[in-house]
Image 1 (cartoon, rainbow over the protein chains, first blue to last red):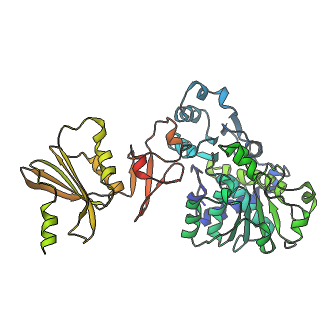
Image 2 (image 1 turned 45 degrees about the vertical axis):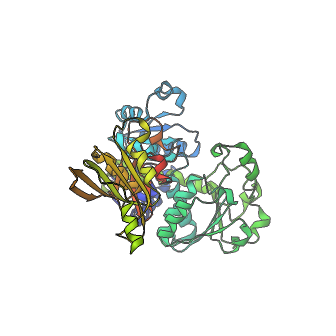
Image 3 (image 1 turned 90 degrees about the vertical axis):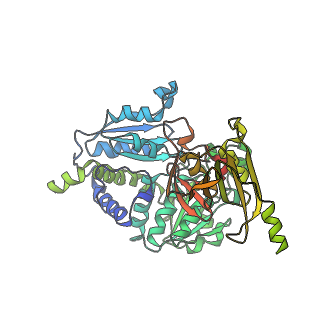
Length: 315
Length: 159
């Protein structure tokens, strides 16, 4: 895995070996992410955290990952506080921030923003979500969570349920799962099904997802149930949102149909898709999944900024 | 025999100088006209258009355009390749074919079309030209290098 000085824009930029390398390194990062061990391998580095869309987990876990490794963080959280509100282009903002830090983490409402940032930045750029496009670091932590729970990623039966049209996490995840021979089921109302171009892309890679609107059709075979929120902010028309909001709700009754070791994942925040009663069951993995953002992002920062090499010399 | 003879007779008249765009996929002539900019009052010569013309080459149908007193620049030829990838271009000088070539669609296309995704960063006033990878040639499909979306309706999104 050689990610030194590389951009992380889309999960499609990674090979299977690189993904497995990141997951292996993430596993070694867990005690450091928990604070049980301390290693300041990124001492003297500065991370520029640019979040032009609201974020809790992604932003905080990048900050936590950086601080755990001794890396300093500078950040912008609102467009209204930047020169973008004065009409500055993203390209100019990136060139300016690039001069202040060693690595840029960008979340932006427009698709392709991270690719553009990578073009204008000399330092590496990590995509932390671009509109309804990619969210590769979420995909990596999702894969890490699955591997941690199941022991392997090969040949898992994965059910993706909820907003598969606008949900960027499921687009990236489905793409990555094809590398591991996953059997994928897509559960959504017709208006929120996975876009055709993404399904064709999966098919080109030999994965033929099963589409249905009925969760009960597929839940009994699932190893992983990946639930997503129906995102109000992605709907141009509120009436369309109201038609589909609340379509799926995972509760203990429906989980009786599932295998005992089936895990429930969710990128969070949840808004009623998973009943709180599920939190205490053996199925619930979503809070562990949120924690896993820290070791996975530590692994990425470390690999990209060269900390991994320094670490190998000291351990 | 007699019928074939009649079809040849009604083909567009030869031009003295200019460009013939032949073997345009049937139905695409009007889109090629858009690329030529015929609605922009910048043309001061005659353009003849044949739609649904019998094609001796493929025994099927084609469109053909003859433009008098104009030779096309490479940007225009590249755009034509996006919607009529089999088209041939003949440069005519004094009634003779001075040059003839088939348009060529490259694997990577820059600055010829805009992304059809309104939320793509290339549609937001940034200092970049839209870029696409050609992911299919039959039919032509372009994938945006920024937002990854497959471009629909190429003729509606030409720059």
